[in-house]
Amino acid sequence: MSDCSCTSSSRPVHSVKELEPLAGVFKALGHPVRLMIVEMLLDGERCVCELQKDSGRDMSTVSSHLNVLKNSRIVSCEQRGKNVYYSCLLYTSDAADDLLCV
Image (tube, rainbow, N blue to C red; front, side, top):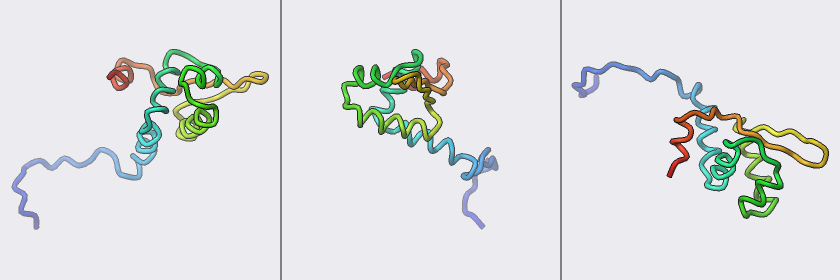
């Protein structure tokens, strides 16, 4: 028997197993460069070359971060000719904008 005298008996809404995919999203967003990429993509789709140029990072770094974001289903990509275009799959609501405001 517990020594806790609290009267609250609320239980978690979701199980740990149910929250694992969401935890993966937060883990993927846990790097400043990936957050910068997502912020750029909130304005609309961008070519990978634009993301590389605007981020000031080398192509291998940008590609690596985009791969993490894609595997976490945060971004999607489409190849058109020689160019690859990325778009953000996160909802762009005021709440999402607030999360990215510093």
